[in-house]
Length: 134
Image (cartoon, one colour):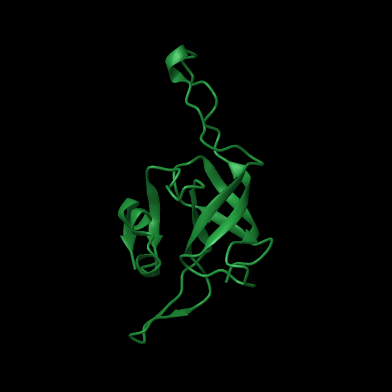
């Protein structure tokens, strides 16, 4: 269950590593797998620096920076989730994938496992970018 001030890992290649939840879009207390939340980037990868060669071609722009406010989809939670077939799923960490306001993912790749509940909530684009889903 993700609520206000919860820290999540960002598992896409958008440039963020750790984000903090600041709002739940469903206006409920907790967000579950597949819910849309608003996050602020707390820690980002240093993609904006030049490489050791120092050439002009070694500069890569980061898609998000520290302090940016973005929308995200919850893809893993540490809270147990019971599925209709009776299976109970629990992940090791809380994780999300950043999306734009139009609903398209910001990153082009998702590293790690995501929950299959995303299919029920119509987030098949995120499922197709992920390497595995459980």
